[in-house]
Length: 104
Image 1 (spheres, one colour):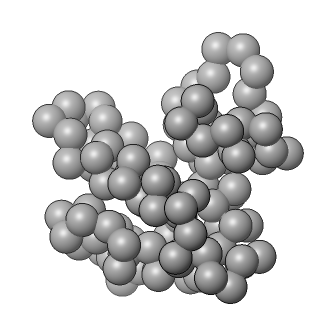
Image 2 (cartoon, rainbow, N blue to C red; image 1 turned 135 degrees about the vertical axis):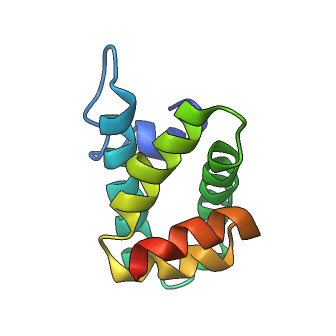
């Protein structure tokens, strides 16, 4: 949460104590979807680039748990909204390939 104060201080962050990672990331995805929908140039802003860099690193981690978190906690949540397809263009190639698979 500290990496994204915009999310931490938003109405989308419902967690104050002892956050559950999958639930926090679900809320984070709702925050990103809202950001994309309400900012026509979101694809080019620093917040989205930080988020994509973070998500790509999670997915490319050597840790199976972190990779699973990226897949089921982030990619799956983001793919529920077609407006997030633009994110694949910003991700690393490995993460983008996995993310795009959720749209098929």
